[in-house]
Length: 463
Image (cartoon, rainbow, N blue to C red; front, side, top):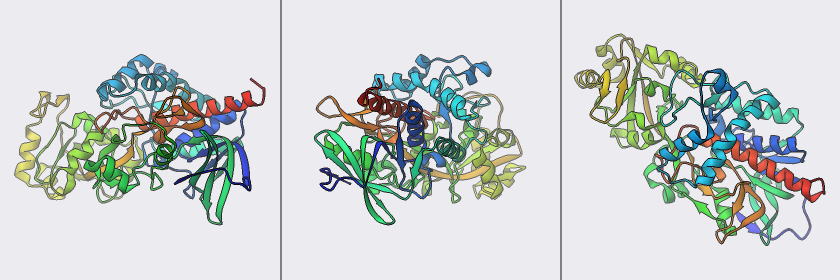
């Protein structure tokens, strides 16, 4: 991951806009730049576009959309921004929060209108920290569908995506990026560009960086994309870019073990609980799924059982991942508490006491409020562990998604978006508001693609 002077022999290929990374961020940036009228090339280290997007539920939070209005939900960018800051205890740069919240609605509607992405709002349960229902997803509620539809849209627009190409070095002259060295199956290629958009996510796949910046999650299951190696931060620091909140990350404490399937947090928000291997509850689960990773990993063997019931399971089935977990037997079911203890291996007496102490109304000993129905047979249970999904720290960017210098000002033609840029999740794990990752990926990707393309227009006198 080096910084090099431009090659004396010139470049093998030159493109106006080069995008590193073909997750949701890179593909949205490409669609945007192309829509503005610029030529773009996307390079991806993996054998196909996927990224951490494909491993997610594919839900994007957005405020004030027509999809919300159609569902009878009143929302605003200001309210969304307040929710983001409240979850992060005010630790985020306010201008970045306002930027993401303010653009979120129009990006969702643009993707729907321009590229036929059939978004709808999740309306049957609440995500912790969101004061309105604003999670927009595709029919399967799966990130794989989101990435596949974005890729299909790029292909329909004639946008080139070259896979199996890992960016290893940047060519830089002063503070201007001139191009990138790519490693592929046939050796290296040097690609020149007028603008570079880093859409290569964070550093969750780099164990050394995880150990350095977030040691408390070092032993978690890595549930992100293996090419999230921290390239953007490494290059940025070598260039003298400003970084922020490198200890921030999104965890998830509800990944089925050993199957490795994400179990929707709806099973908790609708009244489910987590117990450790002794059958005891151990925290206020309503805080959120990111904090849950640390809470679960702190338990014996780093494991827990998530307990819910058939009513809640019916809600969870809108998520393809949950249906997959059921299909392979990760979700255990039981008609009695004795049977539940048997299928989970939990001590029956402890489990019975634990579940009987959950209040139907009011607050429990952990400070969690339960409003509504108690758990009833048939019961459901899934063994889970804590996982690291993606990092939330990164390069600081301005309103155009240009990378900021640590000494002030910006790098004129270097952009960062999604996990390559600092997110809006504060400085740790508890500041992560559901959907923050895809919010930054889609909105900053859109902003970066637009700004880079408009630069091209101005350079060619078309402004």
